[in-house]
Image (cartoon, rainbow, N blue to C red):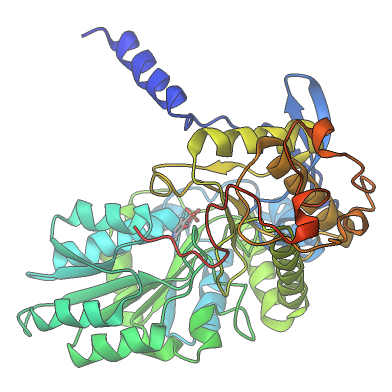
Length: 458
Ligand code: PLP
């Protein structure tokens, strides 16, 4: 085999499909979130980041940085080994206590990432409980799927967030078999939220364990940031809650929380926990400060929800199609890989806005999108600039709008940063402009692609 030709050919294939991933070379400015320097082909320029999973900007929070600096100076850089071999630091112990109380559980166990916590925990439990079967939501994250695949146990998939289908699958199984129902609270790409209580009702009826991935919800929901399970007052009903320390908490690492026996079991049997170096103590200390802060402060959560509302309202006014959901994730639907990349490139090159395109296999083909994640630190001016840029690009490229755009749309007032829209359709290279031409008649754009509330089905 010609190995190099094989690699090149596969990469060409990705490029032809428009889903070759190009990293944006960014340098974040601590203290200026969400601004960053972008190192592009034309040199360096400032950009506004609109797609970070550091959802609340905690990666730059003063309390987090102070804890990390202090611990780094006190303990040095690394953990010094696996948790078993000289790698357990006091900071790990404190953080595990903090996470256990966050979810009202007896115990918590740290991992090097959210991915590893899913992979290692699910893989270990499923493989070791005799004749175990896993029942998995069809939209679950790759890390959960890979964990179960690694365990080689039988798996059944239930329709996304469909409690009746879950029940049908469970009713079909031998009551004596150990069962794990695994699902997420906030789904990262569509931003929709699981009916946790109903899923627990069904799982309880069939004596199944419940495994909830709260990666996109911890820090973000609930009075103390305990996630959707705290918000819905159902944390006590879940066997295991899993989370990341890298998104709303702004640093790095993952964990599970559950009973003392369960966490001890995973600690004692999971190769993905035992055989890898622990996260650095300074990282654990930074996360601990972040978790503590978000336990007692709701300001960040509330401000972020306000920003999300404002972006959604603007998109609705402009008829830019986005999935309707109750979370902080705004998927703007483009539904074409090449176009999605082009819009992302234009946002970066022409408007200094960074939103990466989300293409297959992260989402199903035909559901390509821009995934916008407003933070508490995006200003009104940032939002207006984003809406202005999206509107211009939508018009220039003739991308479909989702709704009738009404007469006298106040777009000019939307963008104090860039200024009022003063183009006419001819200048924009399009036949008609929804704000200047047809829209006066209340006529929708020709290419209506998806209603605002379209739900992606996979
Ligand atoms: N679970 C879900 C649902 C995710 O979306 C991700 C990452 O995006 C992970 C787990 C992995 O978390 P981490 O980035 O901490 O590895």
